[in-house]
Length: 230
Length: 300
Image (cartoon, rainbow over all chains, first blue to last red; front, side, top):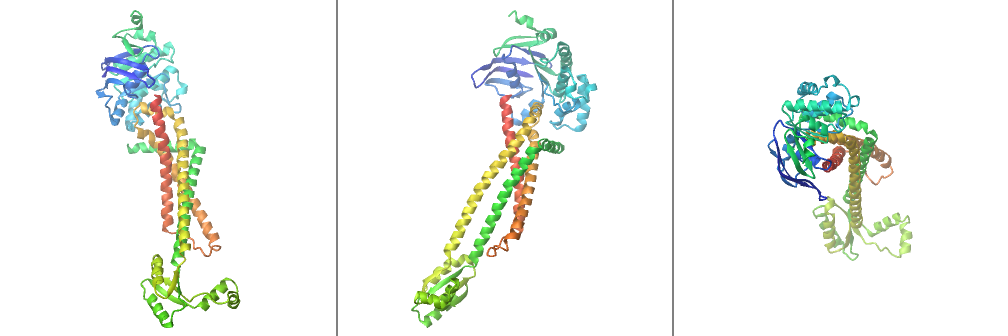
């Protein structure tokens, strides 16, 4: 599903953000991407989304070689990936339903499909009863669930979440992880970049730890407590 | 791009025009002013052009006859000139008539003029009109080569001056028009840029969920086109009103100059102004959006 072979990324200023990364993520996996700030997590996410190109190495996502991807296929690639951010990035003037439906509208889905799909996905994230509320009327956790619903409404094969619990209190963070767990159980591959040690240790999923652009730890059912021992 | 998306593009375009009403009005006014000035210069060039060709068409050749020519030779000469291709009429003007004309121009009597000059220095001449103004120079040259003709003039200096003036009016007009076009594209681009900045999250989200660049561009492009269309219509109205007024007020004053009246050329010009307005509006918006999309790429 996601394959990186010897991937390095160097910026103009000379800093090596990623250094010879090789890893495979299988369909249906739940992977935590961990590491301190500046470790290379965000760079890796940008490369996966093809916001930027690699300096060297190969990235293949959903069978597409991102080094040789054509402009037309880039759209298909992005539509096959759902993105969730720490700051939610919801449209404040649209209600929950419209925020989610928006992702389908911009990909030019039929209106009748939107009417069926949006309530379905709001049900999955447990927000059917808040469909007509505006983002400002929701808690942080609820706003993040709207963002997840929006990321998933086009049925992407991969969900990439960049610090999704960063702005949430422990209770909301825990509820959000339950939603991500449910989504993963339904078959979506989840890659989540996070600092939250408690969540990583509690979930017992695959953990890939980055430090100074290199993978220093990669273990199925891993956790932060093991890393400190390395 | 699917057709149903365009309904959405139009709604978004009009919403954004309404949200930034002051900038929208400023952009429409700039486009209108640009097109109005373009129109004014085009009309000016049309009129100078017409004035020049009017003058050219009324140009007569004055061929001066040698003083020592015999009556028989003079008769042969007039029939030779009449027989030339392109010559319409040939009128003989005696030296006495020429003196009388000159005296009339100087507001004196021929006798007083003759007194001051001593003797009549003016030669006999022929006034020649030609069928095609473009052949004036050629015919004048041929007439001058006839024996018995000392000189043939057709006011070439006046015509040349007119064309030189026309050339400079054109250069100045084109220069000013280019400057105004750049100014209006920049102002429209600035307006759209403000709109784009206010909707940056929406654009970022659109890109993250896989919207195509044209899906993002269309609402802004339509907004630019609407501003251009309105600017074009306003400029046509202004130009029509101004020129109607000029014709009304000046035609009685400038009796020697026959102004170009509204005809099909004006219809084409008005349509071109509107189409060009739409082009200016869309060019401005696409320019600002492309710059913005590139910036977003760098930031993220």
